Image (cartoon, rainbow, N blue to C red):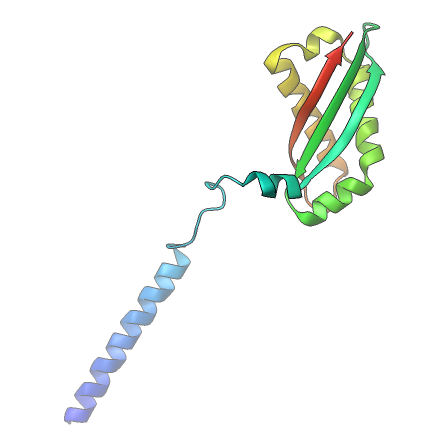
Length: 141
């Protein structure tokens, strides 16, 4: 009789412990939130592709020289983007050829252009996506 009570108590303790662990795991307690963590610069560089310098005419007959770094969300996406570099350069030239220089002026103009390029690149990506497009140099004459 005494052995049965001890066995029941141990079973109840184990069940409560297992339920607690399951709840802890399901709620994600103790896990680091990937979204709230900032990536290190090394991680950003590992997942980024340099698109090089592009020079082209704008719609208002002005000339732009511009360079980009494109950050992806995974190693596979980076590898695909490296293969699609010529397509990305084409996207950038096409977008620029339909713009006038005032559209690229200021912070908002550049951010808007970066978002447009990001969106167009993501349309062709199959192995992940572009997280951010960075303008790394920019000259209009």
